[in-house]
Length: 376
Image (cartoon, rainbow, N blue to C red):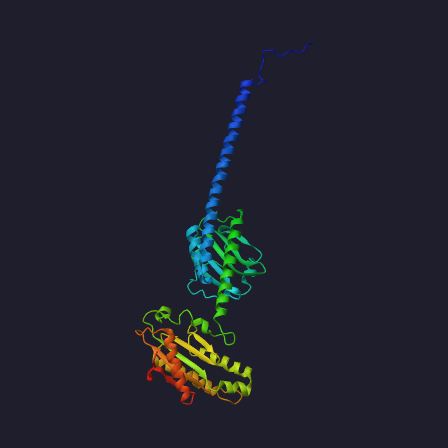
């Protein structure tokens, strides 16, 4: 039986050349559209990244122009919040690290939280450059009650993994802002910039502090006074501020060194500084002028209180005794009333002259510059 043949005019399975070309053009048009969308998306991301790095460079410039570590932190807090639209910026610093000795009094508890030794490691943050968290997937125990509306959080380790000194936290109400799936290259770079900037600022502050610190006693040295010496007191301590100045000199200090040795003399000087610190505030400048001479400045202190402080220090030193020998201290006291605004070197000079009068009268006593005729 003969099989039927299809008709030669049947074209149901054959695509006309015109239709094929049209479909190819449509396919190419779709590909071109997708390509244009991809290019547009990439250009948008490039522009965003360009703007992001421009803001980062501006941030770096602001940080580099900052002075001490506290100023660096304050600048970072301000710039990160404003330039990067963040809802939370906070430092967590290890109290026992290199930053622990820095003054950070201008930063609130919302800006800075001090950690105890080992807390960064215990939280598992030491080995991470950046940790991205979404709050709906679990909280973070270091956050405060005021942070309960945060949607996502980025934690940036500051310092090396074997010796981290802090964590910088960046928080957003947007739960997708710091999604764990996102790239963290930019944040890693930011962590390096912030960490290095703080380390450099701390190093600069330490070098500056060493330059004005007496190596033996830990008090200030004469270089500490140089920027203020010939300036009115108000330029340092503020307008209408009374300032008392006590000038100290150990009696027969050379003889004590000759009899007991220089090590004993060093012990006397250190004991004297510890004695002074028992009666004054931490911020009251104690300056070693050279040898066994010291100047103590007491801003905001009236004459009666300064007199009492000086006598208490002298009495304690006299009673202390070293190898059976008492240590007498000759002292001179000068005072600048709120409306006097004396120059600092004049105030110290008056106290110095009063001290020499005390020494001339037998030593181990206090003389007031107000009782003397002082010629500047």
